[in-house]
Length: 187
Image (cartoon, rainbow, N blue to C red; front, side):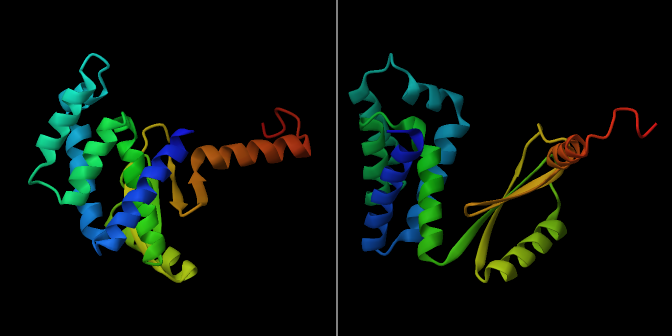
């Protein structure tokens, strides 16, 4: 089973439980908070990923660490993920869970990736434009990618709008190659 399939299976199971308990949003908030804590601290992350730590000890630690900090559904889910040695997949499970909630709420997930933050005005303008084109509410997350030369990429549901400099350069290169313009023609 691939990474993508594993995270989808766990996310779907959690989504079904949360839907039955009428707690889609609160489950997402709790899971997001816990994933943030687990992955923001190297010591915690290394502990749960270490093959040297006894699996039952990891499970007990996970259960104790979420006890009283999360609902029964989320606490049991985190414990199960640790028991099944799927801790590494938690971030992907969270993303797949969010996508599932968005589908159920007829909402689109919009991820804007740029070299530097685009600023509130630009993000709001992009959000408004995408929302009107897709005819639904849009949930926005903004990420930075230092590997981008410039421009930005927009991921919305299963679509990619690539307005990065790298994509524009690749398009220009392809156009030049197809027209077979000799090198030095622009000098």
